[in-house]
Length: 252
Length: 199
Image (cartoon, rainbow over all chains, first blue to last red; front, side, top):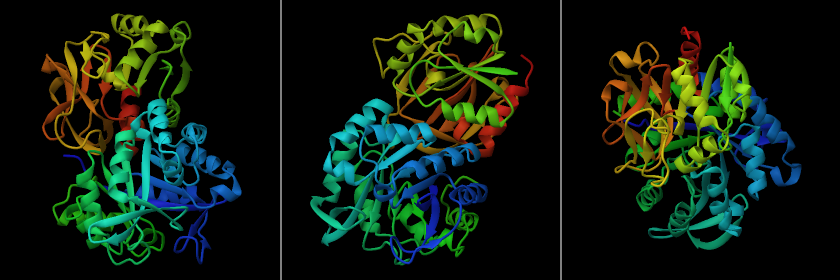
C-alpha cells in the first residue's frame, strides 16, 4: 500500500533557510543543505524548498542550494517560488530538483502547466494553490504569496490544473496557515475528491494529530509542515510513530 | 568499475549519475553506443512516455546495445520506463514496440490516483530477487506498470489497489519500476548491491 508522505518545507531567502511566519519576523536558520540532510536522516519522505524572495534576489542562490542538496540527499526534491517560465523550470530540474511548484505564474499563464508537463512530464509539475475561504464550501485562489485575490474558485482551478498536466497539487489553506490549529479538512477533502492526482495538504499543522486528521478525514496523500519541524516542537520520527499508532501507513 | 548511463535523449539523468557516484561508481553518460563499450555495467533510466523512450533508444542504436549487452551477460539496470521497455509494448504508446526481451505488456493503473506518487513497499519475490531486492519502501512515480506473462521473472511485488510487478530480473538484467536514486538509504543500498555482484 502506498504510504502517506510527510514533507517538511524549507523557506529559503538568498540561499539561507529562514524561520518564522511567512515573510515576517524571519530569523536566519542556517544552511538549507544541513537542514535538508537532517530532515532526510529523521525520515522525511521528500523536501520542498520555497524561495521566498526569488523575484527580488534572482535565482542564482537557489540553484546552488539545489545542486548542493542533490549531492547529499537522495529523496525527491521540489522547488518553488518565483518560477515564471519553462526555462526557469528547466534550470531548476538541471540543478537537481525533481519537481517544480508553480503558483502565481500558472494563474497568470495556465498554458505554462501544459508546456512544462509536455516538455518534462507531469510527474515534475506541481501546482501550488493558496486558497482562502470565501463562503460555505467555497475557496478563492490568491497569488503573490497570498497578497492578491484572483476571483478564481480554488476547486475549479485545481481541476483545470490537473487537466492541464499538473501531476500533484500542493494546497495551502491561507485561513489555517501559521495558526498551528489544524489543517482545513473540508478544503483538503474537497480538493482530493475533485482530482485524480495526489494532494499535498499545507497550512495549519500544529502537531501529530493534525497531520493524522488531514491524512484520514482530509483524504490528503501527503502533509506539509514547516514550523513544527523547524522549531523542533515535534520530530519527523515522532510524527510517523504517532501516525503508525493510528493505523496510517507510513515509510519507517 | 565503470557504469555507462544511457542518454537516450530525455529525462533527468543527473540524479541517477549522482546516486551511482555516491555509492562509488565511475560513470560515463553518453548517447553513443561506442562510448558504452568500455562500461562494465549499463544503467537505462527511463522517464517519460514509453513511445518517446523507445524512439530515443532506436534513433541512437541504444536498443541494439541493450540487446547485445544481455546476450553478452553484461549487467543492465533498468529504471522506471527502463523496466517497461523490456516488454513487448505499452498501452501508453500502442503503435510502438518495446525491446521484447520479456513477454508481456505494460498497462495503465485502473484504480486509485494516477500517477502513483510516493513510497510503496516492495516484497522480494522468489529466486528472481536473489538478494538484489530487499524488502523496504521505495519511491515510485508511475501511471503504468508491466504485466509479465512469465511470473518467474518477477523479483518484487508491490500493492497499489492490487498487486503489480515492481521489479524484474532475468539473465543479466535487473529492473525496477521504482527509483532507487530517489529512495534514500534503501535505494542507495540497492545500487551498492547491484554494483557489488559479479558481472
